[in-house]
Length: 183
Image (cartoon, rainbow, N blue to C red; front, side, top):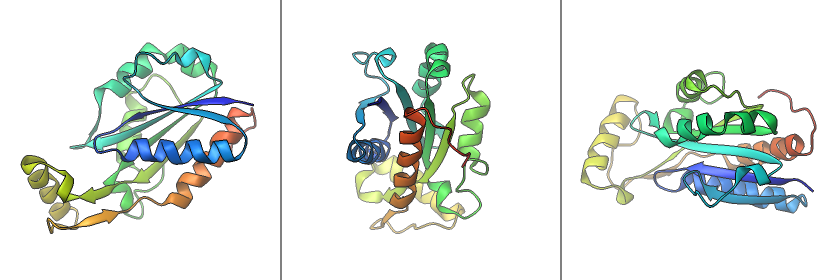
């Protein structure tokens, strides 16, 4: 049975929760999966049969640690079944919700020397109560510009968990060596 490494880079925990959902889905199929932070130096990615990286956006950028990991492990990522997903609020909008149309995933892929076999984009969430004062102001401004919720009491989950489950199915196929149709 394949053992998949699910690495995440997260700001408020959603990328990790998505990795945990993928892990549960893979385990239901009989596969093994390990969830870890992309900054966890104790994890040896070479031990795994497949690698998935999940990265969230903060202020319009993925964490620099994502590209650092990709550059440091490019040969390994290219030698194994591998996938990448981005989590961002722009993906809540139709026309910005696919790997081909999401500006943040497209930007990350353009900067990356590695080209994953499978990609996905998932819409994020808003929970003003979790943000500090400065983050609350910046997120509110971004939401005002993009016509999203600006009320500080707003808690909005935009992630389509059925899409996450479908992505997990693609990961299972990929880890088993099957060809996966592009998203």
